[in-house]
Image 1 (cartoon, rainbow, N blue to C red):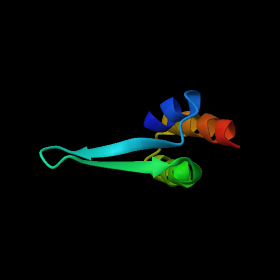
Image 2: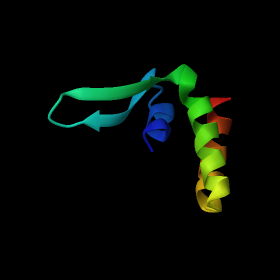
Image 3: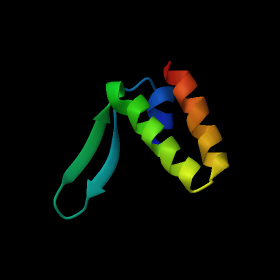
Image 4: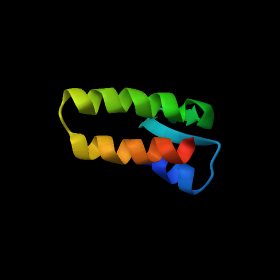
Amino acid sequence: SNIAEGIDSKSESVNIAEIKNHDVIISVPKTEWKAGLENAMEYYIKTEEYEECSKIKKLIKKID
C-alpha cells in the first residue's frame, strides 16, 4: 500500500517499516519498487492469493 501511495504522489521513496522505540524507519527508493513488487507477486502466487496479484500487476504497470 505504501508503494501505491508513493506512485500516486510521485514520491522518490516510501517507508516500508518502522522499528518503534528505536526511531528507525526503513525506506525504499523508487528505483527498487518494481523489484519489490515482483518479489511480492511471487509470494502471492505461491500462496494463491490472486486478488493481491492483480493489485500488484496494476502497480507494476503504473511504474513502467
